[in-house]
Length: 321
Ligand SMILES: *Cc1c(COP(=O)(O)O)cnc(C)c1O
Image 1 (cartoon, rainbow, N blue to C red):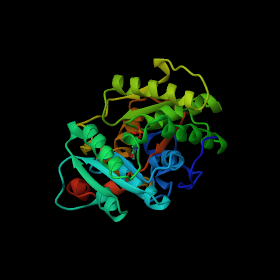
Image 2: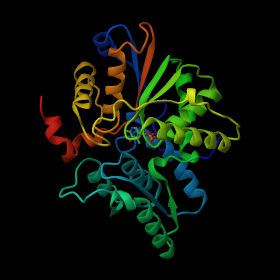
Image 3: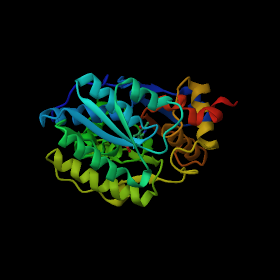
């Protein structure tokens, strides 16, 4: 086992979704509640941060630096992890500075992170500059990549697969939101290591499938090496669906609104506008098109993100009926 700090409430529950299953006809739908990992509203990044923060600690760092979009769940969870473990935190956020702080951005400030801004194209460059400045200033920075998706972060989802199997849940399909690829890469490695034989389907929230698949393939291989294993993954094993990109990253459309309302009204379960709303739109679309066989068990892995429900950006759409 790699060193980790304790941040998450694990194992997260697995629950049945009987009313949504009935609504979609025939399928057995389950949900794994990684929205309940517990750290400042939780989400999938909390699992990754258990390993990333341990590594930062080992290397003698004092400051965590990472990057994301204005409503980044990863940045919010990093800010919370830093507060909890006694690190300083600098976030490089891309986009225009909003007039008011809401949703995840409000929480970033509440959690004491220093927020720097960059336009989207220069984000990696700004991140590097901020890192260099922190180093010169003697703040011993530790760089956490976008989405926490390094092998160090991704191993968390290999162990999450083990956790799922230990809960005696073996679905035919696992469906979830995939973006920087760390979650899916980790799941693939965990499936191989711990003997999950069902299928793992990422619904892309921002990248064309070919781009995301290539990223996942490389990261899964590196993650396996980091765990002392040698694995290769064929293209056929890496399942990514990019039919639900809508108008692009972070744009809340009709499909996401419908899935958010269905989950809320049939199950009392809250999704988010950017990631899980889109992944659930994919799940629902695929179910309606007959993609899953009638008696198959489908697990929706809820990856969190719910604070974005309270972002000003989405208020108008979400407030309607
Ligand atoms: C980051 C994030 C994802 C995507 O996870 P990756 O490991 O980046 O692919 C999915 N859902 C939510 C809510 C997220 O914040």
